Image (cartoon, rainbow, N blue to C red):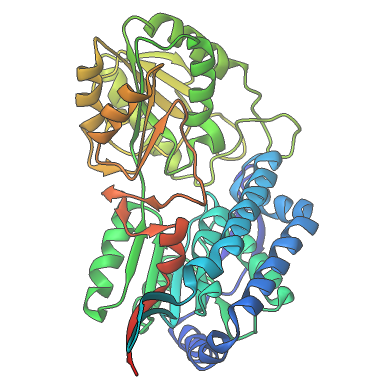
Length: 454
């Protein structure tokens, strides 16, 4: 399997892929080693993961360079990602004992009722390339903390980062046969579905998530899916600092080249603020520095996947053919590497691909609406349900609108945000289950009720 630098289209290295036989061998060793790992006191597992976090900090420059080389994001954004992962780990370490410890539900003369949270066993984590540290620690950190062994398959576009993660976990003290990496692309992922894991946790597209869900259903084990989004954002009529809102939401749409499941993908602006918002938004987008991800100050760099260029080109073509106007960008950048201009489309309608299909790239459609009701109707018009954002001076208005949207996360005067203390979950095509928060810690356990009389 060739590892390609998307910023230059040059081959970094080649790796041998796993096959059904090597994966089964790795699984067997995980299965054998997991009970001993689960039997360790939680405090010992916490200590190991804390050491892993310290190693991330110590090696951040090297790790960021590896990440940037294979996914194309600017170096500073790679550093931000690793630091963000450490922030999430810190919350999990601080709360693991509280939420994984036994819960005494009843304690009275002659009767005690207790809930114990037991590890699932050996879990399969098929991860994503856009934020390999962030989406990775959402799964393998709570899995390890709760006593599971983990087969971790990084995306084929972030395999070198996956290898670094495995090295540091084992350097931190995770036993050799408690965490294994699976190397490969589509075929390797399919082979993992044939193995009898005790749970499957996938981050990626709706299409692949649906395939996995259907494939493993007969196993009767947990299967969580963190999938994509078509996340809407509304700028209401009572926003006072329109320019600040435009700058912040432009970042929410284009950070990491728009390659985030919770990136802002559709923007609806009240007609009162539309012109001012649009001018500030386009000015901000045109101010960004683009180029090689290793150049200081670059904000927009290479797309990770070459194939995404044709998706974006098709969305632009479709929108323009249906009456949209192009205010910025609109095409791929010629030369080496996989680059696409940051693109802003206006006069869009909800029947355009750019407003319905996940873009996962540096492109946004902005629509004028006459009132809150029209904005809500437009925001509801989607098969996805990951996040939704409302910018308004009124918290009550924001909560009223967000309550009517079938999305896993609601934002008031912010967007594109994830917190370790809140559940990260999707509705409809955006997935099933939750990571992060206490629910994310317990997602890797199976509760057992103890009825104790005496």
